[in-house]
Length: 221
Image (tube, rainbow, N blue to C red; front, top):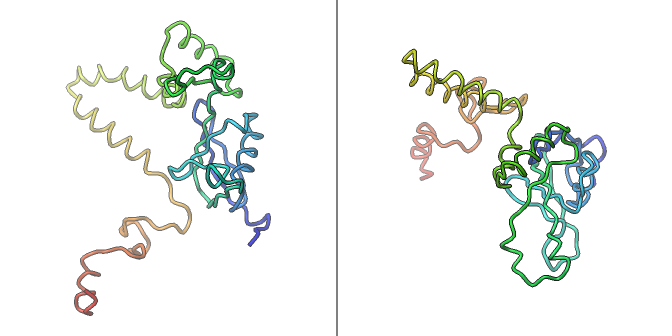
């Protein structure tokens, strides 16, 4: 059944690199190729080099390698879509070189939407310090706010050690990381832990001691 414009869902798009996440209103069912073009138009990226990952699975524009039928993807409100720009093939591949391309190292490139200072830092790290591309990908995948927190943590660590608060500092950091990554539930969404739900409601299919005892008494086991 075709969906109307009012049935669009909001999807969070996260890019591998320094680009900020974006929220897009998309149809709940669409072709993977159309999804690539839509994301490419939002950030001026090459659609033929985009790699999309949803729920840990790579999205392909065709159903299989030998098929000419376009693949479709089902999207839900709140889905998170990971997007990476695949590197271009080396020039020797275009010249028909017979060397093994599988051994070629993937090259990380800064997105076109990156600011000038990020490009300067990228050039310095790659050409001056000769940092591997895999490390560059990790560095630029972390936001500026996260880097400030990391630097601040290392600056405060010696102070905590001098005050004999090293273990407490580390344990407190662990709890803070857990709290910051708990996320936020949408309105009406149930938690996996019934204690956090209104009237202690449980998720459908939850197996606990009370239900196990009830099933035994009812002869269902």
